Structure formats: structure tokens, C-alpha cells
Length: 153
Image 1 (cartoon, one colour):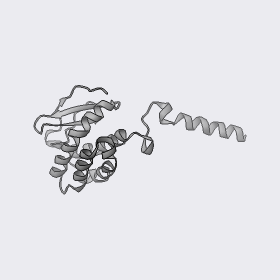
Image 2 (image 1 turned 30 degrees about the horizontal axis):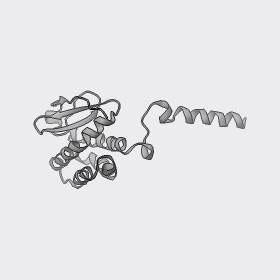
Image 3 (image 1 turned 60 degrees about the vertical axis):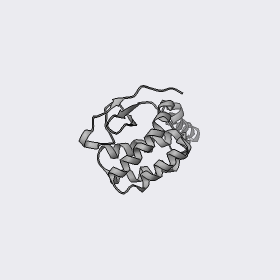
Image 4 (image 1 turned 45 degrees about the vertical axis):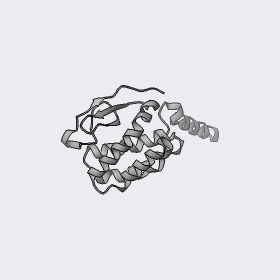
């Protein structure tokens, strides 16, 4: 009976292992670029929905991994995002951060992501899926943007 329980636990553990299931690892197991993207995407989603308060926790977590993912320039922009006092300021810093991180995210080829350019702000962004949700203008111009060509490593 004990052997059956141990075997069952092992099967469950292996079955839910991100590395074996084809999913990206989460938390401390993920590469810094993937960790950064996860929080970046939550910030982008909040900005696209005009929900400034919702981005705070993810902006803070993004700032922790920004330098490892994109260097000191990314860290500086992420810190600016954390310090933003309003949504316009947050969007400005998000744009600075995106200028650094979008080429890195594209090179990483994170599954299920698409890169876009906001021609009015001349700033890129990356998001999950292919339904445009512009973080620079939010609901006012949610579907404004053009797809950027993929980049490789």
C-alpha cells in the first residue's frame, strides 16, 4: 500500500512538472527573462484596462528581475514604473522599459506572445495572444497598433 501511494505521488509530481509538461517553469525556476515577462504582461494588462492601481504589485516584482533580464537600463525604467504617481507617468516608464525588453522578449521566443508597435507613441510592447490591447492609450485606443516582425536569437 505504501509503495502504491509513493508511486501515485511520483506520477502526479511528474505529470505536473512544468519541464515535462511543455509549460514554462514558474517562480524561481524560470529564467529571468520569462519571470520579467510574466510581471510585464500583468502590468501591460492593467495599463490597457486603465487600472493603474492593479499594476503596482507586478511593477514591484518586475523591478526585482528587470536588471537580470535587461540590464541596468531596464532596472532604471522598472524603478520609474514602480515610482509612478499616475497612469500617464506609468505609461511613460512602461514605454521606456518596453524599448529595452521587447527585443529581449522577442529573442526569447516566449510561446504565445506577439510584439506590437504603437505608432502614436513610437513605443513597442509584447503581449500574450494576438488580440491587440494597447497599454499606451488603454480603452481610448485599445486596438491601435501594428504587429512587429519576429526576431530570433
